[in-house]
Length: 391
Ligand SMILES: *Cc1c(COP(=O)(O)O)cnc(C)c1O
Image 1 (spheres, rainbow, N blue to C red):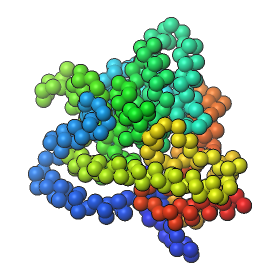
Image 2 (cartoon, rainbow, N blue to C red; image 1 turned 30 degrees about the horizontal axis):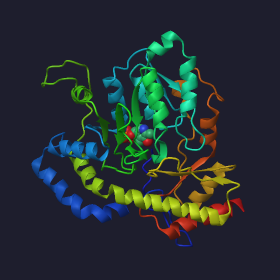
Image 3 (spheres, rainbow, N blue to C red; image 1 turned 180 degrees about the horizontal axis):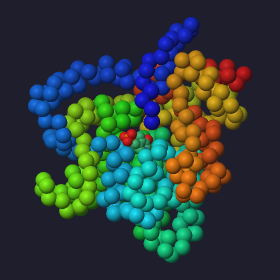
Image 4 (cartoon, protein in one colour; image 1 turned 30 degrees about the vertical axis):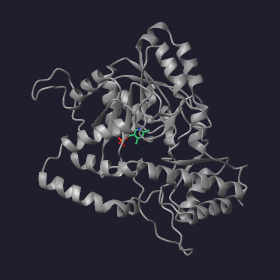
């Protein structure tokens, strides 16, 4: 996901609406951040250590899991989870084609093959019915190779976890939640990252809980999974220079952990601000009378955390995007090319038309600014410009 955080030049109306404004967020918390960074510089203890273990406990508590393990990024959280699950050469992993690249990239990096499943049109999340159809169609030997399923909680809203976990149980699949966009999101009162076997989070700066660089976390209930992952995080050894497994360097550093720990205290407040912004967009769009052209994101689960507020439009998405950018409004398309049509996955043999819902989403969606500090005036400006474009 691009790091779009520049405050843009103001136009003649004096209004600018960036997609995200991390400088504004930093101003509000820098009094707390600076002394901790200073302390880490004095200590010169940078990799893992007490700041990381403390954050791991805080995240496990926040996500309602027994354990959490700090890792180098959301991408590495996925890779390490698959490695811990023993996914390897020739295995199959079921997932959505409408997600950030890392979800499927990690599967291929383990030597396994992604088996894509189409999404639900209303939420853009993995469709449990489509999952059931694909599982039913697998041969005996394919079913034996199928090791895991990765539902993605896209844009901050949980996938339909009950039917997904039930299908996984019936077919002996490990469930790895890609919760990189969904920290604090809930499904029937349960937190993202607590429903599957492992939950993967990203602290990339543009996520709802972002570090000052790369970082990530894996949550889990099972202590044995935690212990194995802890080894794989440091080249597969319990003791330095003695290797039981082939792991990698997947470590989180103290500076990132300390920054995230400070920000975590504000996360629920920021989430409610995002949710208020989403509610305000709904009102402004209703008043603008654009329902024939613009479909607003459906809030199907009870706690959508709005990492993104993604609308879909009937026509002229690319022209609308250009128009808004020209009016100093930061918008983005997540994602213009579904993963089954990426050149690097050509050998998987997928074709245009294989996943019509995902392909339509890639053509019609547009993310609008929804960050916590966004003002009502800025939102009114965004909706006005969209109305103007379609007039
Ligand atoms: C951001 C993201 C990732 C990867 O996280 P990084 O920390 O950037 O490596 C994985 N999956 C999804 C759905 C994401 O949005």
